[in-house]
Length: 148
Image (cartoon, rainbow, N blue to C red; front, side):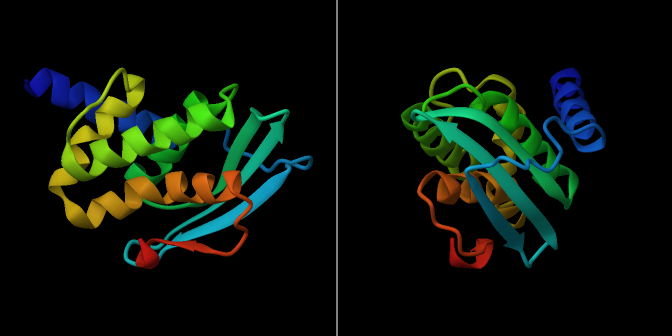
């Protein structure tokens, strides 16, 4: 079990140190900012949706390892999905991160399943997801974990 925990920790650290899709996007169809005042995490999420498909997604910002890793993994999984598929993954992720219950194949997101045991860290993990969900629904106001 320790080997698996070490592997999960390493994957989180890898995504924190070398995040995927960490860049500005000039031709985004939606841009939403997110903030977690408890931890200081800040994110700007860029989304390019064409014909109901997420053609591109990226983010910029700063935050703790869990926040950055969650955003990085999310962008790799959401790109190429339909809006409905992204919404479904958001719902499954939210359930996993708040209860620890994994529904279906969560892929690399499973590394974050244990975060539910640390309520203060749940907001770090969900910030990018709620920001993405707001972007999908054209809600451009600041996404804050205080309202979750």
